[in-house]
Image 1 (cartoon, rainbow, N blue to C red):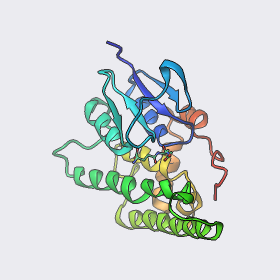
Image 2: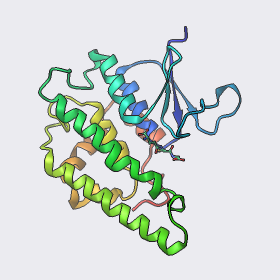
Image 3: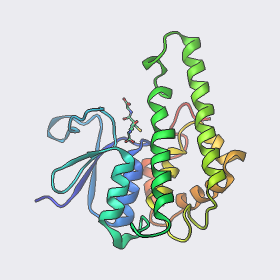
Image 4: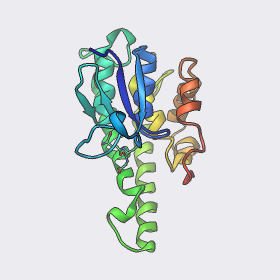
Length: 213
Ligand SMILES: N[C@@H](CCC(=O)N[C@@H](CS)C(=O)NCC(=O)O)C(=O)O
């Protein structure tokens, strides 16, 4: 059996959080671009979205939050999630789900407003409204979390990786300005983590998003 994970995705997309988790875990993995053809092409999934993770068993996983939580739990020695009986576990699960459903999910519309409305003015309005909603999401999180070195205290978890990737998408300025200075300070720590610095510059350099604001 091939012991290597395969991450399907693209530079600057949600798969980079999965790559960051696998990097900290130290598990062997390869990355296959979404546009790959031939035998390497990404497996068909219900949503046709990434990240997609092929486990060494051959099983296919989608859903970034589920993948990150599963990886952290499957490799407890890497200490990337609070244990099931930790008092930090409820907050960990709460914010993993929040980033996934209240922020990340909005980009399905924000990236391509034509999926839900017609006409340039309506699309611009949808984009602006969703940007406000995303900012609101980060500000709610800022108001509810008192970070330590990392979002949940002394140990870096996959939540820190997730927030770092998702907060890089427009409106990035919202997080790094006055809206969420506490989260932004943690994000800067994650960005300069010695074992992740190469990953950020290769897989998600700042300025990749043409829409960046
Ligand atoms: N719920 C999914 C959302 C994944 C998602 O939106 N992925 C984006 C890339 S970051 C994508 O595949 N976009 C292409 C599309 O929606 O057609 C998850 O959390 O993994």
